[in-house]
Image (tube, rainbow, N blue to C red; front, side):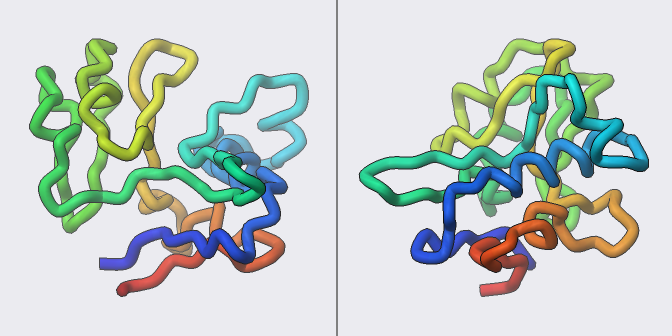
Length: 142
């Protein structure tokens, strides 16, 4: 299964992937309309430690602890992708606590959010990958 990988050597820490992610999940047709004067809530986060920048996003684990810990059944594994049904999410955040990578967060409405690899986008390539100016983020099978 294809996943998002980041080459820390190439990551500039520019945070553009966060903006592309927030835009891709906004439902708006224009990035300016989607993000101007709005708090962005990307599903990928850039962390910086010891002058090394790296992206943290869902790794779509083979044995996902978040799915096992979800008390409402909002998280499921479909074709290797961990998907969320926000209508089922009760906002208990057990999944956030159980993720060993810290890749899950909550949205502005109290439900959790995570990377779903932009599976609902037309071309199927995650927007963080397309928007990375340095090609530090790739979508490939390893």
